[in-house]
Image (cartoon, rainbow, N blue to C red; front, side, top):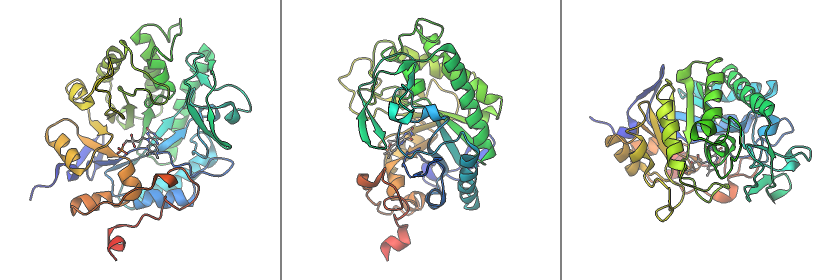
Length: 367
Ligand SMILES: Cc1cc2nc3c(=O)[nH]c(=O)nc-3n(C[C@H](O)[C@H](O)[C@H](O)COP(=O)(O)O)c2cc1C
């Protein structure tokens, strides 16, 4: 009997995924402890979702400077590595695979996270957005333009974080170069007006990304490195599209063909960009033919659309975000064409188990 495309196996590098239903990386702000260490509830949350073909665990800051949201876990210290070890062990015991998303928010932060010092960014341009601080949402500020030494240090921080992720037992890492955070800030002319080798041309604006990949390659195999891009992000997290946007992402994605990465993870536009100049409306349609490796597609997919995209060759796998929050057994539900539970966005970022580990699986839901 032929299976739904979403339920077919997929090889990424040396790893075989049991299916093509990927859990998208999602910040849940549950590491409510001074050292920002994942603990028991993280273990339980990810264990519950281990039937995903691949879990991409939440954005985890690569250094103290990389943070911009309350209670997000890190991957720069020994205790954090120990915390993550219990998570990867649990997922592996259930037969799952798990990558960790490496995160630096850049200017999407606030001095409250940095002992009053300014967040780092490619250029001193305020995103005019909000940062989720320990004392609530605060307006972002004008960040500090990173010096060349600070850029070098940040690249080393990515490398160290990747090394830590390997030590913690992850099957790979995903570089978070998406959603208006640090690396995405380098790509865009609206956030990067540098005059040095990291600004100006599209090659210069993308340079840091390739330096990060090259640095991480020194500590782990290329085929365990994934990467996320959101080319049509507009009017969200301080990003706006301009006439350089499409040529820049075309350049990046074509150049990624020089590498043998685990995958490229792309998001379709988060909002309606049909009237926005310089926007790619259909990301998979444009970039599937351009990118030669494994392509994961995301944003607002349901079961039917996911199956359709794989069947049509527009993507190899589909990442589901919010559906995985409320359906820990999303794969089993797809297998059975079962109804899906609704998520409650009031508990996306609240501490504790509520709205985190208490969404029931199908059998219990029926009972
Ligand atoms: C609560 C929440 C937290 C998120 N955190 C992250 C994150 O840490 N890293 C990231 O790349 N995207 C993050 N996203 C975006 C999701 O990965 C995904 O792109 C988005 O939810 C759209 O997919 P969906 O329609 O399947 O939910 C987050 C989304 C949500 C709802």
